[in-house]
Image 1 (tube, helix red, strand yellow):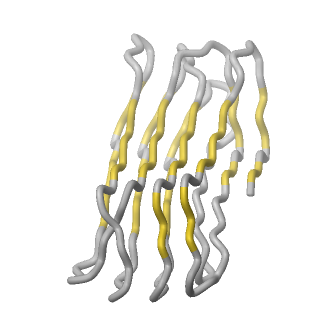
Image 2: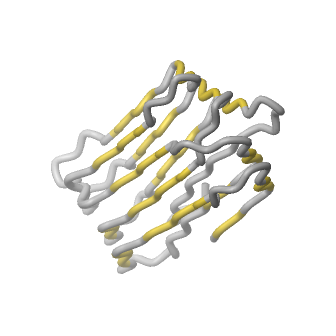
Length: 162
């Protein structure tokens, strides 16, 4: 990953029974002396499926070690709705913050939500949040939302938002 860039990637394989395996949401903040990231939000919404399987889902927030870096009140939320047929296995939410005296994380949020929907297909969906390489760069109220409409037989493939 290039310095000064935030990347969030959510990839779902193409499957008839709508299987989601090894899903990863990664928010990586590069090492920058003056870089500030505040009120950053990344939201993934996937319509619910009776046969929907979610397996090995991961949400990882990684923050590099930097003396001038400020990060505080960091939140990582994995929300899965109540469904009779839904399977969730090996779901992990990892918040990793390096050991640094000056490091602060502030208002960072990563949310993965799976709502109820029948016949929904999502495949190879990508959402990328890019922060420019700047010493004094400020990122505030950043929002990246991937929403899949409630539609039977709906297909979303190779979706990219930058």
